[in-house]
Length: 245
Image (cartoon, rainbow, N blue to C red):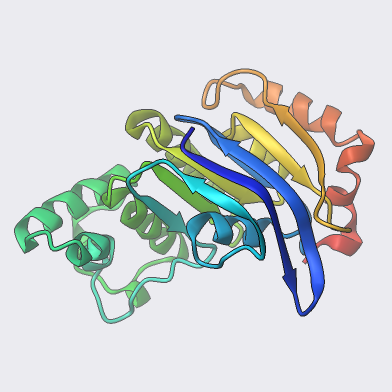
């Protein structure tokens, strides 16, 4: 066990978002937290990250460090790509030469080229900025990575490439992850298990293993799984246009 949420509940302005939420994240496991807008999935991730405290329940952490990849890249505009990727290493007190070398290695891992390293965020495309955000998370060698809908704003082709990057990184670097998404296809591609939340009251509608191994599922297997599950009543809210942002 790397991370566990025990009976977690939270409210905003007196309105309960979810209650009694349970989650145990295993060693090397990727769990997709799935649901329509407003179901509380980002709040759960923020509680897991310690960014907000739950009003009820408790969080148990059994790892050295975690990293968060947000929906927006959140790069510092006055720093270069390489400096942004190495930001967490600088905060830890690592020497400049070591952190530059480690940041450069992670930048290459996500497909950034050496000529991109000295560019500022404004000079990068949206996809390159998101690659840099993933590299920044991986640079600190986290045991757990928390992804908050990181690929929502990119086009379909790049989204797939970034999903493959996450799958490969989880395999080679052996971290555990929570991946927040409202896209069932994305959940099936990147995760070992998914938890489906209701937009009505944040309750867990379903929790299930995804058959096969992430990164080894064929496009046909993913399509068939999504097509089958999308017909189940538990997933109706996910495809309700009234609940899309």
